[in-house]
Image 1 (cartoon, helix red, strand yellow):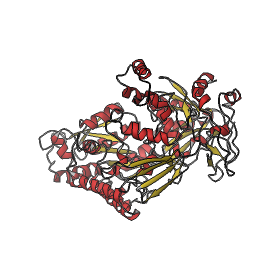
Image 2 (tube, helix red, strand yellow):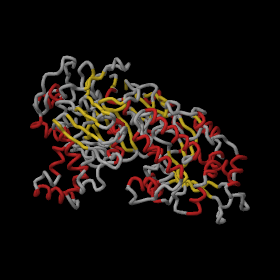
Image 3 (cartoon, helix red, strand yellow):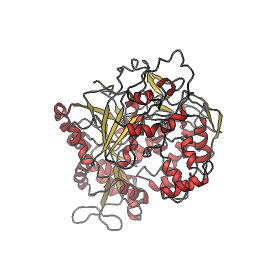
Image 4 (cartoon, helix red, strand yellow):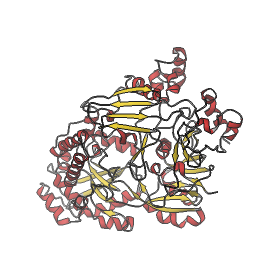
Length: 637
């Protein structure tokens, strides 16, 4: 099984393998798994002790309250779009530094790091660490990305990513030796390490030995021209960018550092990901992780995830499931051979309405920018009824704010303008000049049009449509007609970004449990993905070339505070910035949260071990399953 794939993967290993120095006394003797035994015995793959770094990351499972596993098995899971095979990078969660289960940043791919005043960061690599094809992972991979990719105008027209720009300046980056990389700024960059730990990491390194053959600076020109023509692209840069997709994970030839590597080429219904023979983590018995040999990811229609999971066709499933599926999943446990866990969710709001303050319609834009209107819309939502109807009172009604697990939690902010108060809502709308109504008691805009608020959705979550149906009824009581328009996710986002959407629905902030070290940039108009101010975000992201400059005092203050956090000298100053930004959001309601903490069903095979019974399902921080380390999951049989 997988013999052909293995041969392709190991083609480069024959010449790249080299003997490592003896392991440190504290490192347990490495143990070979059975999956690669055939290749090792045939001499096509070095033995495990020669595949690991000199000092691998040793996982103390006992200290984590977990069991030692036996390698083997195939784990089945599902996604709903072909592009979502990138979830293997999210779930794998191999990062230079990552969050542990206490949300502290710890070294992972790095052996260690040092920081001096958040201005200078020294990254120490693991000696002898290798990519999945056996080529060395060294500072050259960082130098190649920095000098030949990020600062190459053809490959990166907009230059290095924003998180590396501090006070308008790029860092000085140096590479003293094979295992040391230094990033240094004139001013503090406190967001640097957290950015490296994200669910979608900004890869500041590349498999240079592989990609150089597609770079004009290093490749044989005739061979490069052949590759460009063969790939049917316009230039070497287009070819390089097509192949350079560590996050997309769809190029099976591109080496990786993740626990599993893509063993499937092209578009398929099922993709297989096999264990990385050079993965850097072992347990304290010396067994190389991941325990599970193969992950089989099936692409299914969104409406089929719950049904197929109910039938026992997934060993680990969270994505594609919603709380409304919990009852049917519970009923299928006996025959399906699984159990259904209910994890907490980490988003600031399970359902949030985003009035578009950059909507192209001037009349509606002026109405939506009036905070009295946004407050009235919030007061016109019966959150308790939605919680009872959709979540059996297991969620927490409230405005969009951080969750109690964050040190910045404020009950006052959590309940700001979140009571169901029709009288106050009507009074606010009257005060805002929307006191005229048509024959159907729908309020009229200043230009005479009926107040028909069109809310566009991604059409992916039934609870969103169900919640909006309830909102439709209660908004009628305040003279607002809600019109719901389901769209494809990509179409929705593009319409919002273009200013064509009046209002939309999505989750709240991904990170609902921020700490002092968490950047509050997502609370300021720094990114178009915050659906209330897409054009303000575009203006920031393109340095004013596209979009619109923030032109409301509170939004301008949010930008100042985000900058204050960046240049803060200590945690007290950062906490002050966070607190004021959250207070502004609570007062201004840029997003109208409905409830948070809705339980997330997690289906786990009865055979699967080390999956926590109680945990947090969060994109940031946590990478969904990633922070819980699926490379430590194993099958009991």
